[in-house]
Image (cartoon, rainbow, N blue to C red; front, side, top):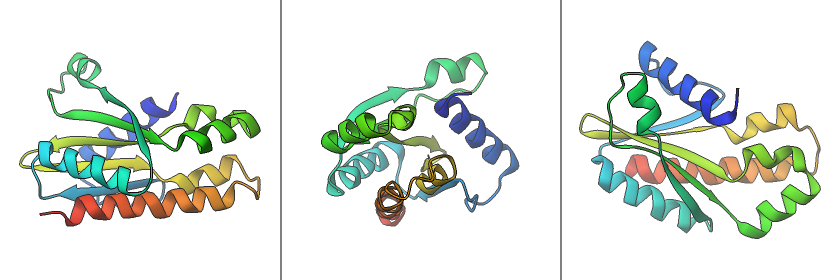
Length: 152
């Protein structure tokens, strides 16, 4: 199962169970903003952490096939070009996880942002040289999530 499928499955499971956003392998935040405003805040927060947004992917078609209707569901891919290039060269096994991404979707009058916890990669890639990168990604993701959560 690829990363996006795993992320989507975890998201649907979390939504179905109405569980709090405390899963060890996920970072999740709810915004009081409507989806369009939350999307703008998310993109600004990503850029403020020094990342470049590489792609906005719509997920609607596959969700519609599963009878889930939403036109406000995107995956935002982002990274630092030099970092992604260097990691792909030195650790090609990381390529499926690059660039980083955050999912954003509308839920009523709110927006939810969700991503896989970057530190879970340490379990799969125990190279000590990667640990500071995963830790920085975690700090950056938490800051991005906090910015979206705290925006009014």
